[in-house]
Image (cartoon, rainbow, N blue to C red; front, side):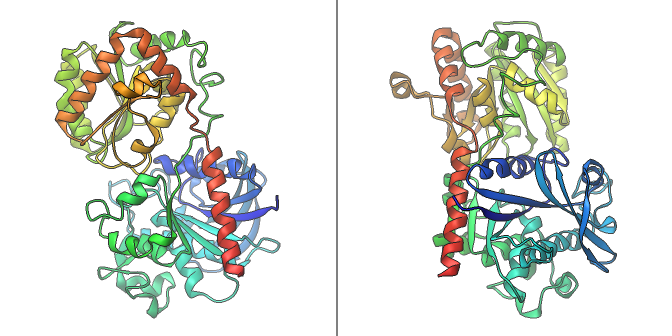
Length: 485
């Protein structure tokens, strides 16, 4: 198997900076690709948390002036990843959220910050670092969307380009007056380039100009070509359908392994599941839930937003309580929804436990200690939380959208007869359908022998990166072959 080189360009990577699933994907894919003979270097911004974590970093490229100040590219192998880090303190030397300032609003210079990330990605792709010449530049989401554009409009070596859409609803749109400031030529502002409804569209540019487009599940790849889910880009995506594919995400099955998980108070595996009860007890204690081993504990690990259907869940809480179930929730998001869950925890004391924010150890305990995990999303490109739930034996209860539809097999009557169900799937994403799904889950829970069989099948599901990595390796090599032809 010949070695193949890929430069991954992303705005976040676990464990250094994480606001969502993107960071997990960017961190977990390189080691999986290594098993396919693909070497990945990852270019990320030099946020303070990234710079502080680097081991034996060396400077491999410099910029005298990169959008308002000097910058350099650092190279380091840290946390098992081959990193290029864009050290530009005037752009990224800010603590906290990578995209949002302390006032709760987007940083006013986000256009320049992530144009710089795309530009440096393109420069590295062209061979700016001596001895490094990737076969493919792989851009993730709008923050890296200009990397394919700079390669398309630039001169010199041109590697293949892949644009992955993790969530089409985040697009990166900025005034057209910034075109020159970010370094794109005037002719880039066209319907076939970076122009998007009179603005500069960073994600749109990547979708329009990359050689290949992927998104994070086959169902989402089909959905985003429709008017309902296309977020204004359905026409472009239909036009480019011949280079669009859906490759399902996986999870890091070393980090997310209940048998070896050091963040759990009690470890277990599919054959020895008794320790799940001890984790459930620990979770109930931590979130102030009644210590009731017979209560069905529903869990939520999510952004608290309309997209995730969290408003529906608030409205469904009386039904959940009527069945004697409990809710354990970890997440943050829209202030109104946060307040709704906090109020519910007070109203249903001992039955609803809420922690606003994110805590990695609690996220692991949620997967290991809840009986079922709720994901009532209105749309969901892939979702990772349901994959972790399958791995840890928390039965996923999910809307039939995007990657949720691709990863969870509904435990309907025929599926149970055929021993194939792994969760509860419902549609549409409405209060009535969610309520019916909760009632189905309660009925399954009451038959403990049936529940254990369902749980065993869930835990046997392959949620690793093995198959997705093979698909990406195949795509990369096919792209390189087509460009050489």
